[in-house]
Image (cartoon, rainbow, N blue to C red):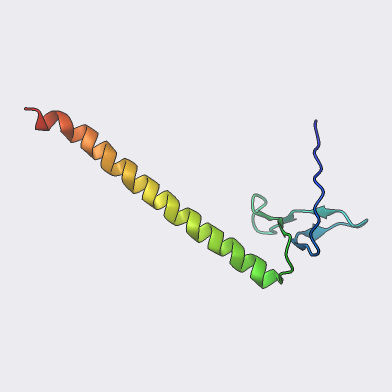
Length: 88
């Protein structure tokens, strides 16, 4: 296993994680779903609410990008299906 470390010159760091005894930070695991974890980090000074809001904004942008991408490929697929019919 190869590990890589990166030095950051940030003045602040904001983290959302679970702290184990000894100070180790691990992803927080939801008590309702073991597959749902949270481990977020940012190199700015942010509150937990601001970190969640930033994550929601990123998810919103990704969702719309995927919707546009899917729409384009759906239109392309329909065009490919019906293009042989237009040749008749």
